[in-house]
Length: 299
Image (tube, rainbow, N blue to C red):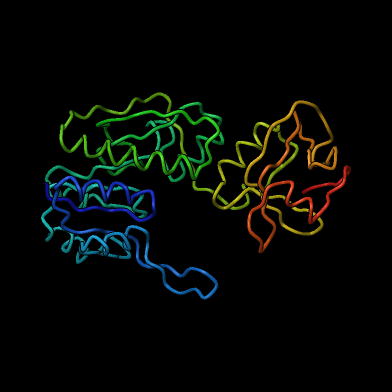
């Protein structure tokens, strides 16, 4: 098929690679424009942009697809289908109507659960035992289109980063299957709809008045970004991994010299932490350089 591929972050790269390797013709790659990044705020190309250049594919970076000239450019590529994976721009109906077979989206949840911007993190935060990938025929609504294929995977104790990598590979394979087999679309169920709101940095601050299980889920959901954090002696301290222990203690207060923290229900013991401006380190290494005695308050 003649494909326009539309994606931006690392999550979309395996799908681009799989489609390119499978013999389809990638007419063009659409991705978000380069964004300022790092301390110097130099413009940085997206992961998809960089990979497309390595593959020798033409790249388009429109600020919007609402303008008629942008739609004309899209139409001129004469795609059979558009494949979308975390692109980041709204596709107006005029664009959705251009490909002969429509626009197909790789969505990182089992729709209709977790429609929206942050399905992986919301699944972890909610304590879902299972998540997965859905291939959906796109329409004007937010992740409301009919379903073409889906595959589940256990969440276990995976971080958002690990789950993103797993679902990216799963989605790439599933999309290739859909393009080869052309399954019939089925409407999304009306029951079980949930919305995965965009993450806010303030959500990553740990509140020890919550149960230890909820805090541990938040730590995994915000790893690698933005990183769950608390404060200690006026310094922001990221907690990147933690264990849940039985017992009870005053929320936010350490019970011992091993950084065991009381919560609303159960105890939390960080295992991987990061001080501001320093690399991540395990708990023992942190405590050797920065002893935190029992009775210390965090947050």
